[in-house]
Image (tube, rainbow, N blue to C red; front, side, top):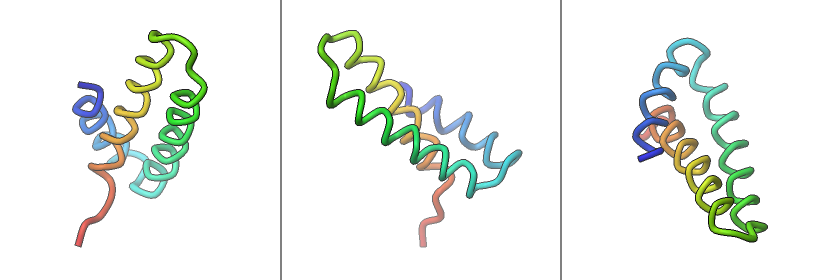
Length: 67
C-alpha cells in the first residue's frame, strides 16, 4: 500500500527535483526505516517503520533506471 503511494509521489518528485535526488533521499529513508525496524520494541513502531520503508522502496522503484 505504501509502495504504490511511493511510486506516485516518487514519480512527481523525480520530474520536479530529478532522479538523482530522489534516489539519494529514497536510499536514506530506506536505511532509516530498516534501522527503526531493527530497534522496534512494539508492533506500532514496527508497522510505522514498514510503511516508511515501503514508501521509499516505491519511490526508488520508479526512479531507478533499469537496462
